[in-house]
Amino acid sequence: MRLAVAALLVAGCSTNAPASNDASIDASDASDANDAQIPSDAQETGAGEAGCNVGSATLVGSIRGISFAPKDAISSTSFEPIIVITDSMGLCASQSNFVASSNVLLFNFNAPSSISVGVQSLGNGVGVSFANYDNACNSPIADVGAEGEVTITSVDACGVDGTFNINFVSASHITGSFHAPSCVELPSDGGAQCEPQ
Image (tube, rainbow, N blue to C red):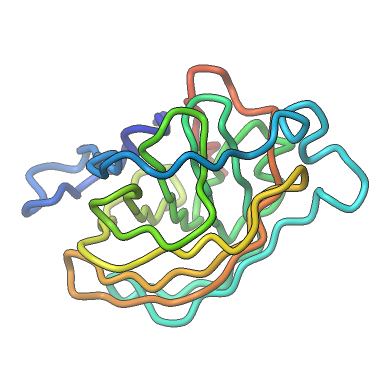
């Protein structure tokens, strides 16, 4: 299964009722974001720079009944602007390969090569999608953000910091924060594969 940044490939989810075990979530239904960018030096040094390579996040609430403790977060503009939060480790080093039996929260910013400082509403600059991968890399549980906000508090050579308050199509609600180091090692096509256990 591949994770294309613009369309998170998951099983059993779309913005409507699931039709099969494989469907896609389009998290790019947002309008253009503002003009602030991750500086170009972040793309050169990225997660390899000392002090910049530890991603972290908090998450309060659950998505479709699933609560998870984030262990890693990254930001990237190598394909399009994203922030990824997951409960697996080593996301950047593995070139964004997700592992089986993990949860992935994807923030997809709809602006070429930029993540803006400030508040961005879902549907107006950012989209959010969630996938719960089982031990065979299928994703029978997934969801997309319906409304809410992502607040970017800082963007620098080390990455992106911010908070979120999201309501999902399923009526799930989460809040949290992130420190997402810039990851320059993502594949240029924005894709990655889930690795079965």
